[in-house]
Image (cartoon, rainbow, N blue to C red):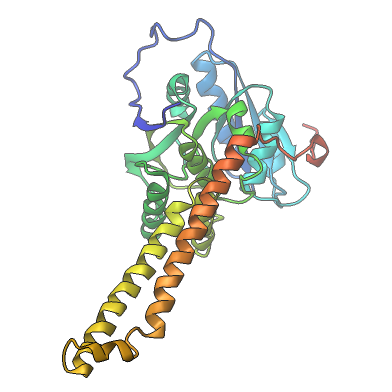
Amino acid sequence: MVRSTEKFVAGEDQPDDPRAPATPEPVSVVIPAYNEEASVNGVAKHVQEVLSRAGIPHEVIIVDDGSTDGTSAAAVQSGARVIRHSRNRGYGASLKTGILAARNDVIVITDADGTYPIACIPDLLLALREADLVIGARINANVKIPVSRRPAKWVLRSLAQYIAGEKIPDLNSGLRAFRRSVIEPFFSILPSKFSFTTTQTLAMLCNQYQVATVPIDYYRRAGKSKIVPWDFVTFVSLVLRVSMLFNPLKVFVPPALMCMGLGALKVALDVIFAIMRAGGLRWAILLMPVVSTSSLILVLAGIQILLIGMMSDAVARRIGLQSGPILSSLSSSSLSSHTHAQ
C-alpha cells in the first residue's frame, strides 16, 4: 500500500459521489475524558447530532479515566455508553479501552474538552474510504494553539517528518478516523499516555499505510489542559523509540557520520601539525606520533555507531518479515465499567 499524507479538502466530494456506499458504515466515536465535567455532555450530544443529521449509524463511547469530578454522571446524561477506569491510566489507555469496547470497525476519536470541530467528522469518514488513517489537521485559520507550545510542536513535527520521510501537517491531532482492524496490530507499541496519537501517526507512515489529512479549526479548550511542559521530552523520546522500531538508520546514521567526520578532520589537523613540527614532509614523520588518541576514538566511535545502526535495521526488518499481527494484551477483565442511575 502506498503511503501518503495528501490533503482532503472538505466539501470537494458531493453527497452523490458514485464511490459512496448505499448505506454508510456504522461508526464508533471514542471520547476519552478525565475531569471534563463541564464539557463532556455537550461534546457527546454534538457528536450524536452531527452523525444523526448525516445519516451515519453510530455509537458514542465515553471512557472516564478515573475522574474525580462529575464527569461520569455528565457523560451518562448524554446518552452515550460510559466506561469508567477505576483509576487514572492515561489518554492512550482510555483510547485502547474504547477501541476494544467498540462494536464497529470504523473508529473516530476526539477530545472531551470541546476543542475539535465535531461537524468535520463526516468529512473525515468520507476521506477514510480511500485511506487507512485520516487526521484532522489543525491548519485552518481558526486555530487556538497556545503560542508557548508552538516551538515545541514545530521541533517535534520536524523530527517526526525526518523519521517518516513525509510531510506531516499535524502530528498529534486528537481528531482522527481509522479502522480498528488496522490499528490493533500496533497496540503493543501504542503508549498509554498522551503520545498515543504521535505513535500511531509515525507507525502507520513508517509501515506504508495511506494517511490523509482534513484541514480543521481548533478552539480554545474548556478547563485546564492536562499536558505539562516536560511532556515534550517524553514526546521526543517517543519519536526516537518509534524510529528505532521502524527506521533505526535515521537515528544512528547522523551521529555516526558526525563522529567520523570530526575524526577525519582531527586526523587531517594532526597530520598538518606533525608536518609543521618535522619542518616539512620528511621520512622522519613516520617515526613521530602523528594521529592523536582523540582522533582514533572519534573515527572508531562513528564506525561502531554505524554498525549498530545497520544491525538494528537488519533486526527490525527480520522481525517485520517474520512476525504476524500483533494482538492486544488487554482483556475485558481490565475494563472497569461504571453505571449511574439516571
